[in-house]
Length: 197
Image (cartoon, rainbow, N blue to C red):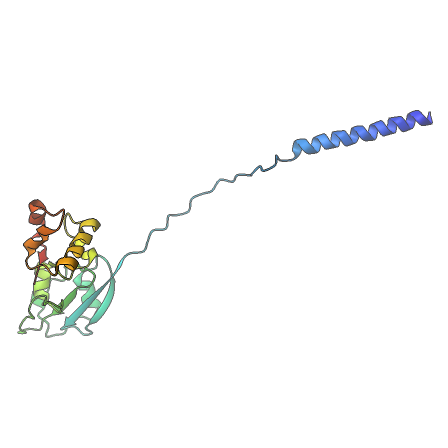
């Protein structure tokens, strides 16, 4: 009986070990298994608004270069500069004009002789002329300014800048037609928006 008890106990232990091993293997995750958790998308990060630098001089309290958000108006710039001086020629100022990077607005005083428009060094142009035309100087415009013209994208803006680097400044606005991709139809849409001093 002692021998059969030992055999029974040994068989029972082996059976329990086998059952335990099988259960362990069944419940154990497969090698390399990855537990997936759904990912919720957060809010998309949009780039901040583009900033521009604009110079204001003349009859304002604090003439200087100011940084504004693209799409700002001359009224915003005048406010940043402390407002108009009492002697400013307010009737000649269009406060609704859109600002662009690198522009210079000169606020004339009453009775002041206007500064000649857009000299070769891109110095001050009178507020009355800049505001009424807001033309882009082909010889000093940045790629961003050129890109803002109707029909001109980044690629043609780059060609315009490459052309003037290679051939020197434009002598007339019609010279822009010498740039690859700008024909008569596009020139008709541009001619009132561009200038060559």
